[in-house]
Length: 306
Image (cartoon, rainbow, N blue to C red; front, side, top):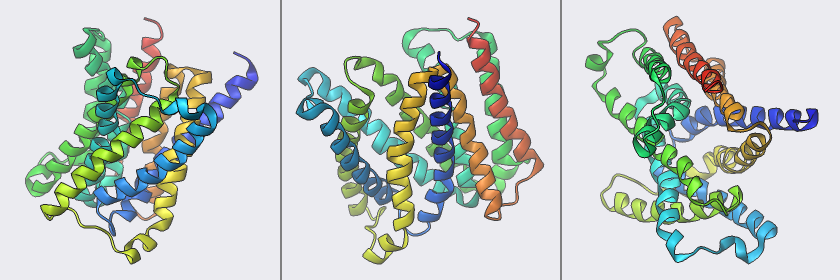
């Protein structure tokens, strides 16, 4: 790899990792005003429009062509990523309150580990005892962050278990979407992202209609949207478009193994932003986060030798 390609890949993944990390505190502030379901839909409607324009300019009308045999698959994967994943993670983040931002970002860092478990079941690829041990260590780290070293917290805060389950399920939804890209080898990353986003938005609209009729979701007012326009701008353009494109560029030059290490920046950036905003982080939370991030890094380095 040339020095220029390495530098481009490094800078691209670095920028993407920082942007991904900053999105959780920004989303958290918006969720005080607007419910997570409408927030997700509006965000990805903007993302879909921007990506569609870019796809048309790069690939023309052919970029939007989908074979009948591919239709159900891409609809399902789009629903997993742009409906289920976001609905679950943002709903869980809002339910968890002040701790939800850090919890969401840390669980997102587990995506590479969960991917290994899913592939183990899906493709019968045994990851090895070292990897399984490191997965347990990473989960222990998350457990320490959630409980802050106090196991009885689940008895004291009975509402904490539900958001944890929702966020953890969202991780699986994103893993399915990530693995699903292998079923579309002839598609560019831009086409896969754009079409899955468009189909995911269709599912989001149907789900929101149902949730609204059940009085679970409420449409935001114009004043609500105006009050979170800055957050929507960041979450759609910067986190939803620019960071994703940067991530794809970075992984193209560095490779998935090297690029995935930058996902560890996500909880670190989130922690720093939350501390800057006044969150009092405990020593046990720092230790737990380091345990999770360390296990992911060690596993990444160990798997290079396999």
